[in-house]
Length: 55
Image 1 (cartoon, one colour):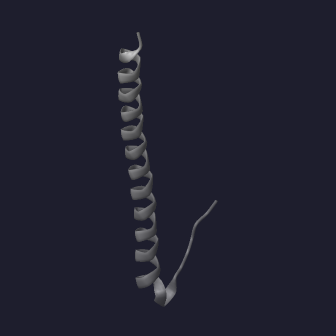
Image 2 (image 1 turned 180 degrees about the vertical axis):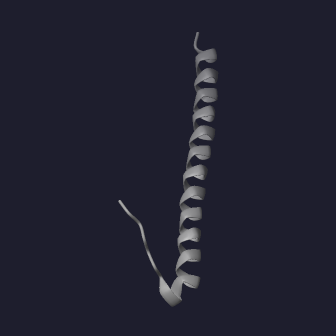
């Protein structure tokens, strides 16, 4: 796949928009992964508490 995109006179608007979009995607992925890790740790902590209370 060859990506040769000439935005012409609109390049000053198009390329920053692409960069912002890519940055937003990276941010959303990183935030989602961080949240998933936090929730997993919380679930493991709660499970350990629950297991500790079992007779």
